[in-house]
Image 1 (cartoon, helix red, strand yellow):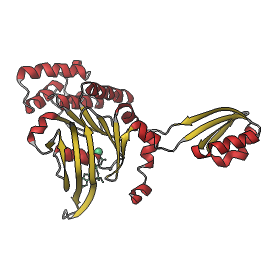
Image 2 (image 1 turned 90 degrees about the horizontal axis):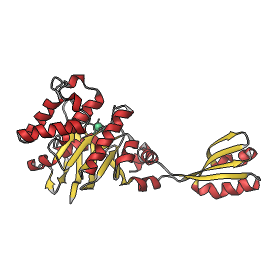
Image 3 (image 1 turned 90 degrees about the vertical axis):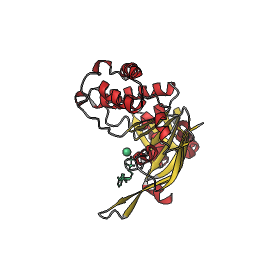
Image 4 (image 1 turned 30 degrees about the vertical axis):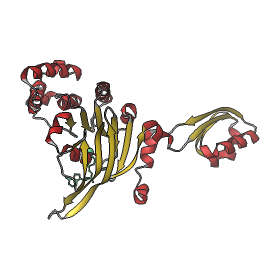
Length: 310
Ligand SMILES: Nc1ncnc2c1ncn2[C@@H]1O[C@H](COP(=O)(O)OP(=O)(O)O)[C@@H](O)[C@H]1O
Ligand SMILES: [Mg+2]
């Protein structure tokens, strides 16, 4: 079954003193996410990621369009039991302890008392907070708060977990912990839909990603496919630095160490470069294809030039 179907959702915020100036934040968005997928929603600041998540959560109302979650209309109250949500920069009442906060959210989701106690202990363990359960949240680091936030989102064992920028503002260790948590959700068969502007995290975690920019979907696909759509380049290393002058116009980068030269060439110019190097009587050391990264794809699809062309 499809976990999430976004059917042309759009959002214009009304801004200005009289709230009469519509500001488009999301153009018609169509997206389908399968059950069990880990899906990354990528885009720079202001792209429309949080707006999309808030629309799906029913926190803001769409200007037009609709969505279905596990086959139900996304505003169907029954669906709340099946979804968990970590907002961007969540704010929790910070005089509560982690256990109290989780107990509160579990009550909201109607988890019975005995079950709550068991689940909270398990979740604190799972999020690496077993020793901090009684500590007040105001004493928590940013990374610990994010982990409590994820625990809150999964306390009722939902089928789909929505996370808005779960790794932002964390140090590398904090990010790794969140990454591992997301991987464990994936292993449990959960559908995870998370937004991020940190590409390496998306690359490491996602089955598929979508790139959004200025409210417009720019690309969607399996990470490896998107990467292969980026410009193909090769790195060529040869002995005979004297030849550099003759081939410099073909190279996007180059450097020399003693007699050895290195250059980066676009795929379409590779044959010509090799031919010229032969003519210059150099000795070829290596030719290495450079695969594009998700970052290359992201940059190519989030420039303003592209935005104009649509
Ligand atoms: N409540 C709001 N009122 C007016 N404009 C908003 C509001 N929330 C977001 N926006 C605008 O909508 C656009 C998308 O924002 P957002 O969804 O928060 O992007 P992202 O999460 O990708 O950074 C931005 O231009 C932002 O300024
Ligand atoms: Mg956001």
